[in-house]
Image (cartoon, rainbow, N blue to C red; front, side, top):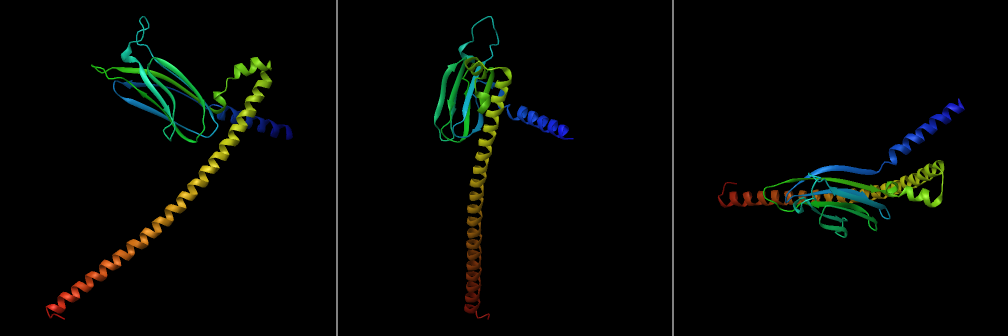
Length: 216
C-alpha cells in the first residue's frame, strides 16, 4: 500500500510538473494592411520573458517585400517600451521585468493598396520556459536526470512565486472591493437624502399652491 501511494504521489508530481512547466505561448495569426493587433501577457516583477516573431514569406523564392514587414512594440502597463522594431521581417526580445502588470506586444502592418494580409508566427516564453536549458546543460556538464531535477526545482520556485503574487493580487482586489462597497454605500445614502429632499420640496410646493388657491 505504501509503495502504491508513493507511486501515485510521484505520478501526480510528474503530471503537475508537465502541466505547469509549459508556459510558452506560440501562435500564428493574420494581420491586414494598416491594422494593429496586440497580445497581452500578465507578468510579475523579476520575471524573465523571451519572445521571437517572424513574418511568413508568401513566396520563398524572393525576399520578403517591404509591404509585408511589420512594426512591433512591446510595452508595459505603464507605457514603458521594452522592444521596438520598425518595418522588420523578424525579431527577438528578452528582458527582466521591473514592474508587474499586463505587457503588450503590438504588431502593426503598413498601409497598402490593395489591402494584403500577412501571416505572423509569434512565440512568447515567460518564467522557467524562458530559460536556456541547453546552455545550462553544456556549461554545467550535468546529466539528463540532474537537468530534469533542476527544471523541476525552478518550476516549483516559479509556482511558489506565482502563488505569492496571486495572493498579493487577491489582497489588492479585496481592498478595492471594500473601498468600492463603502463608496456605493455612501452614494446610496446620498441618493436617498436627495430623493427625500426632492419629495419634501414637492410636498411643500403643492401645499403652498393649494393654500394660495384656497383649496385647503
